[in-house]
Image (cartoon, rainbow over all chains, first blue to last red; front, side):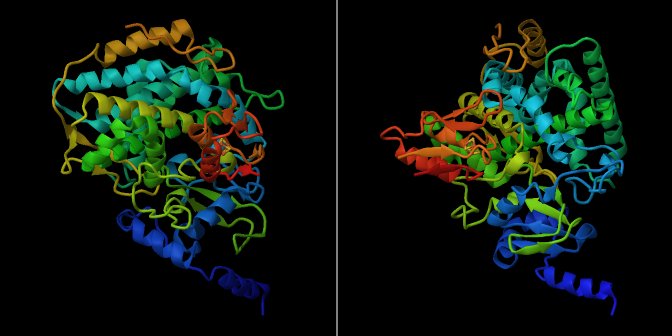
Length: 458
Length: 63
Ligand code: SF4
């Protein structure tokens, strides 16, 4: 009897709750509700043999416990093999991400905390509120581009543009560069590795990374305010991290800032088109409903459906015996449908109370951009409700991502509406005006040095 | 009624201040919450209960 045999018997026992879990298949998207129900009922934590074998936490209380145990559950991505070789938050590891760490989402404290402390003053609720006039002006220009025609693609013409432009503004990157960043960021998520388009997307991605490196070098040489500057000046124990580490953080900000808010907005607009009475009610009662509706769309559509982790010590948590090095998938999306926390979890209730959802993750890695996402989403939604209240999405034209393993997103959402009149200039001219406001008022300063709201000339 | 936010648990999700803006204030720099006063103002009890039930980190306690 070898020791190996004994431990494999042990292994069988601790992995007795098994579920074949493959979130990267179209089937997972199609059967999401029944798979979720099944897992909640039979195995809120399950072992799956897929992708080299990993745990899947689907139940709300299990996800709650595991996500908040950062002493035993690691986010580290040890790309250079300097520590314990952990693989970060992607299951399976993404080929594109080989050799680069995904910013502080793939770090553990204290390093992770230092980065967040450096960036929080740019992203706190008070910091984001200062930008509302800026955001409103970008939304206005996007709608004005289309309002006379009576048709819009909510993804291409609105929900892609606003988060991209605003993220660049906060970073201190020229607004006119938004197109360099926009397509590769979204396409990298929805283009499968075997697609004929992958070479083109790879090139766009490369061009984006080059621009980002250029911006970092430029800002290091000639500081201008923004998140890039915060990183250019960032030190841990008196030492500057290498540029590839900083570029990983900038990549995280872009990846987090773009596709997720787009996904949330598109899904919400599609649902509101299918439920015109609810849309009218939301518009009418927005003072009391806008906040709760936003949280409910976040819960229901959970744009970032989960995160991978690595168990960092042998331990028992949530009734399961884990071994150091085990991989774990925390499913925010499935936890958000747990009936023990969210009554009637598969129904959208715009007035839902006690909605302590997991859409931004929980624990120390809570999405640092959550205030950005909420604010940008609400500002887009309000102007759509005010300016094109009778829009109707064409169900034939709507294109959802084939899989929801990485982002639960949409590629197209065309809609028609009664045409109206523009209120101001189009997008290009608006971005020039807004760039001047950014430069003159130093809008991208952290809230610790600028408290006042953006003033937008028009 | 008294209310407390456990600093070690709060991660700045901001739901409490969204629901009961007169009871919770958010730090300008990191968005973490603290009660404006440990004593819940009369009439705000229901909102505070709702906020406690809505905190994703379960960081709010009422006594
Ligand atoms: S809802 Fe909870 S985690 Fe969020 S700010 Fe309030 S107390 Fe903190």
